[in-house]
Length: 202
Image (cartoon, rainbow, N blue to C red; front, top):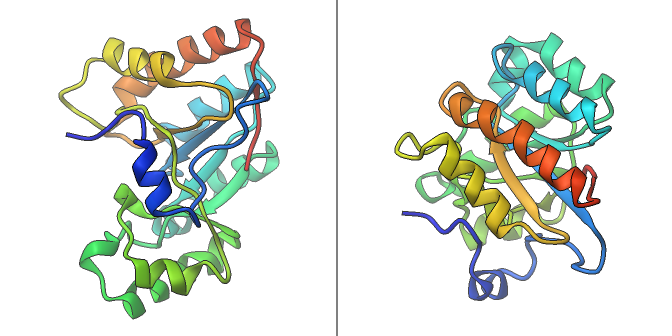
């Protein structure tokens, strides 16, 4: 189980992390984790282009190494880039020194100042170590597109029901998420655009 909407008390426990932005403006911050891959990432870029939407892609270093042309597509289209470790490491299961080293390895390729921990799992010692050089970005809406037990319709409902002004929303440009992402993203973008939202990168 996972909360679709990040509970307020969790945000209060970790105030140095970025969870959302001002609720006063009709702006949404779409983020895509685990890419870039040729099977899914170009589809995301094309959907965003329809609405002149900018987003942030938290890239796995090894995927950038394998698919540099897809990574270049993100930059060429003006999207923001974030670091998601080189090997999609779980911070709770990784010694801090190894974790930081893996992030640095990723940053040799992505050259980003934004970081998101895979699985959202990061220890206080890792936060202390990283926040000098990175803005650590979490979220307040988790689409659940990675969840194989979720229908595409339920994924769409997750984001439409819980998104509000200033929300940081998590999607995944991954093979695992693809069936739910391909259904949800076009419909969600159309809905939000109709409501007058702008879409910005971080």
